Length: 384
Image (cartoon, rainbow, N blue to C red; front, side, top):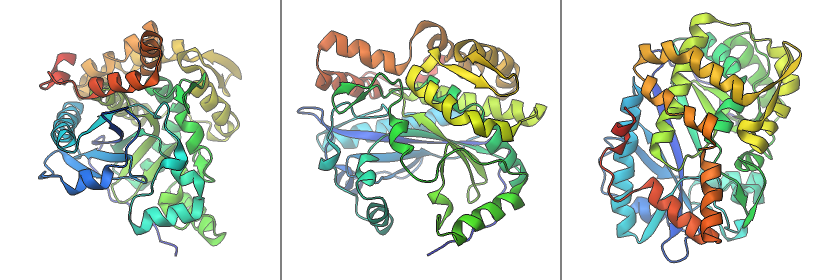
């Protein structure tokens, strides 16, 4: 059954929303546990910080903040959601952690969550639905018009490798080091409508493109578009979908600061996009960021040339500093700089823990403690 795209709901410019997919693990061996339905069913929570809901398998949940004008507001919501989950996870004798993949689970052991949509996805995609037990951060940025949403979707698409490299937190798959910084996105790429938004002039062109996909039987609703960046008309936002779930909420807030500052700069300066040329390099650049992280070499079709991601990212942070200052999130944006220059990212942290423990069970245990430290009380305020 196909669904028409509704009217684009205009939002206040540059408002933010963040979604995090989180891992539910056993306190005994720190493998994934089938606990989502029980955890959600036991919640005593009034929704003040946002939503806590089921995801596709019983070993994961999704939290989403309230719409916020500032990154500080996002950080406060994430802290409230974390503290709520800590309390209820303790009651259910489970632990919760971030990261883009669970390092050693076996996908056939996963169970699809109850619900018509989840069952339909399982019937459509088969085993891919269970293999989709991977964990990402989605960032929504508010825009004032549908045409701006399409333009920003394509403009942000150029920076997909930047978000991948900064958030990479999935080096381990099936108990082995994948050699990737972000192996999670390999699971996403298996879906037929994954990838990048094609070159589109405006919202009318997007509607025409999507209607064509529907007529061909390729897509039934906009949720079938697993694009790296996509418009979200019911929210009035553009959604960035390539980030691994970070190991700590502070990192999630910093990535939201990057999204907000970058969107402000793009909408303010309107650089030439060369969207048609980007199509030819987007897939290769995405692979480079997933595989090599900060050491990626990106193809620049405007050159044409090849540029080091690390240096271009440092230049970008300098470029965005004034926009971040105007938005009141410069302290969050600056917190990303050590990841660029000091190999301080989450993938490197996980590998160091593995070298220390020589087993992945203890790595997951440490990741749980990092997401939900017992002594934390608004620890995000230390970013200032």
